[in-house]
Image 1 (cartoon, rainbow, N blue to C red):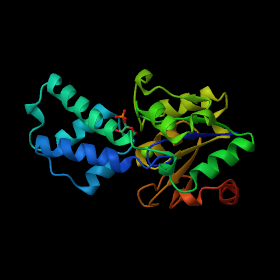
Image 2: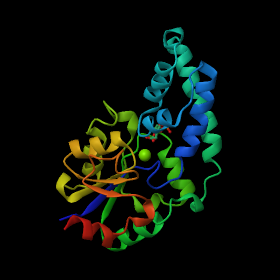
Image 3: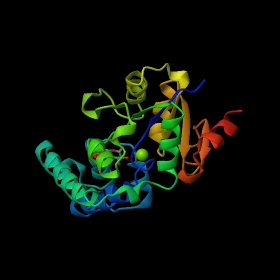
Image 4: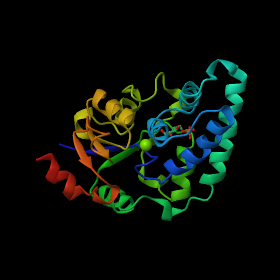
Length: 218
Ligand code: G6P
Ligand code: MG
C-alpha cells in the first residue's frame, strides 16, 4: 500500500530545467563546449560539480582547468542560476502539480523532497510549497548522487516509510535508476523512451493525479 511520495524538484514540481540549461549554456560557451539538447538532457538530476565535469568532458579542454577554476565556474553558474530562480512564483509550479500535492496532503500521504539541488529550499519557498513536505534531503550530506539510490533511501527515511510504500517521482533517467535502486515504485514524468526503466510513466505533469496513479498500479 502506497503511503507517501518522494519528489524530485527540478522538472517535476518546478519549471527550472530551462534556468539550469540557460546558466550551463553560458558556462559551456565560456569553456568552449558546444551546447546541445542531448547534453542539457543528460545533466538533469546530476549534481552541480558533476554537471560541470560533464560539460568540460564534452569539450576538448577538460584538462585545462584546475580544481580552483572549476569551483569558480560552478560558483558563477550558481549565481547566474540564482538570479533566474529569484523570479520564480507559484505560477511556475508545473501544470497539475499544485493540485496533486494538495490532494495528496489532504488524503494523508506523507511527502518529502529528493532533489540534488542545494537550492531546493529556496525554490520551494518561492513556490509557496514548503509546508507540504515533512523533510528535504540535504544533498550536501550524501556520499553519492543520482543514479545512486542513497537520496531516495533517505527521502523514505525522513517520512518514516518502508520503500515499497513510497512512490518516487522523477523526470530524469538517473533519478529513475535511483528510485528503482531504493526499492520504491518509480514514476517517470516525460518521454517514455528516455525514462524506459520507470515502473509507471506519465508524459506530462498534468496527468499525475491520485486516480491516474491508482489506475496504472492495477
Ligand atoms: C537538480 C537538477 C540538476 C542540477 C542539480 C544541482 O538535480 O536537475 O540540473 O544540476 O539539481 O542543483 P544545484 O541547484 O545545487 O546546482
Ligand atoms: Mg529533475
